[in-house]
Length: 447
Image (cartoon, rainbow, N blue to C red):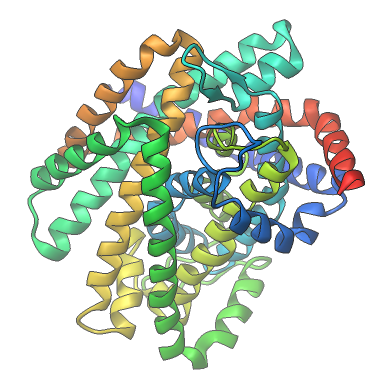
């Protein structure tokens, strides 16, 4: 076991090492330049389309509205990464990590736009008549038979990564937070979560979409308001916080208090890695949900889909990061969710920790729902629709085990598989980028 652990550790170091970070950022920058910064210039138009996309159009085909598709994506991405992931990045990389998170998100908007455009453009119908899409179908239908192995590789990585990153790790975080804050036994959280997850995912994407469209906007707005209160309390520290973010992004952060200090490479590595973990730009998951959305335009779907990265990282992660830095707790030596909780508690004594725990629970729960759909479609691609019901049952059964298990190794394996998902997806984005550029030009020539 020691050997396997060492091997996975080494593989994780390679997967999330400098070459992967260069590949993710480089691909995003390349796509942003090819699109002539359209994802940034059309943010306003994207929000308008999102608002209009709350209802299903008669002339459009798909299982859920574009708004529900985006909320399903956000359900999966707005999770522990926004609370524990941001805190971990600052703990290991210093305040400068937040700057590199922003960079990842800005170029990641182009990556996510392209993922969704290709997923919708190359989607197909399964045996039940439902739309399916994502990187595996874009590779199969866009690159042809000689690249089939690449689509299968993505599906294998995604099919297994989901059980860790999108299921057991999430419920484990929920259970730990509830035990610490409210003294709820781990097994109780596991069983209750299992029941609620089962009630939703056994109803398929339509029920997931409805639940996500109800929960996600509420949880995002409520969390932003709570974080805003922290920033108001620490308003005097905001200018200094921004100065630290930009200074430590390019120069080493010295050790201070419980903070061990961090080199610039650490700020870049953990900022980019935790940013990707949070917004999933480059992993290809957004296209899987958006392919089920009602649409007759891949470009419109892409403009709605790219907002997931903006909302997740530029808005929600920034609020968490600024709350941690302005409150001064980033030098306390705490890490993960405990560091975020300390920031909220310092500004709102007696209630801050409770607010953060409730946010973490809701975020993690919706992530389990969103990732169940991603994992299901990966297995459907490999095995067919006969895998759907067994997958859903297995997914539900895995939940209570995640709540009570020690997941250090499972986290490591899932994090590694999560990174490996990016490789087939990024390669397909680069190879199919001319298609995205053509579809984009044609769309804006007509509109």
